[in-house]
Image 1 (tube, one colour):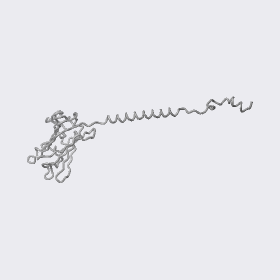
Image 2: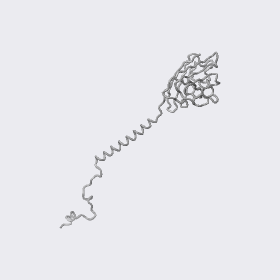
Image 3: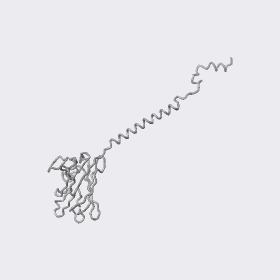
Image 4: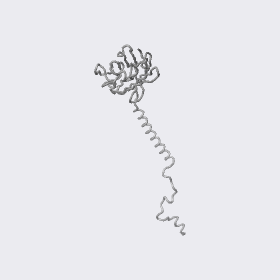
Length: 210
């Protein structure tokens, strides 16, 4: 018997079946593709759930409708006032979550702008405009500081020139200057900004009366 024939039918002791049989892939291509698709679908579901959760946690701003009037009584300046009346809200809105912005331009078109933040004590220990009526837990003089009441239908916010520098803090100290102040027909823009969402939830332009 030739040596070559002997080696074919009696392989060496260190030769394994794996050395004799043809190589076979560990995972077939079909199974590999299915695994990749499964992983992709799982990742897509995780990302979708994550982004959906972020969207749901974003603060949805409430809705607010109001009316307002401003009178600059040139004959009796202490009777001048700015009054804001809430007509409707989508839900009760805490004034601590709001900024009030007023803006007007004088005859020379120079802008005058005020931003009132909650509990900023813009006049002594008080924060104007003061709240009255619905949603207000009355404090001194039956009113409550801006930042300490809730806006509901029927809530009023008021600033009166008889209250020291209150009008100056809400309409700038130029409001009653002559010339250059607020006159008959001066447009005054009033905005409410919802602090948690950063959205302007009410924006209205009114016309001053004298």
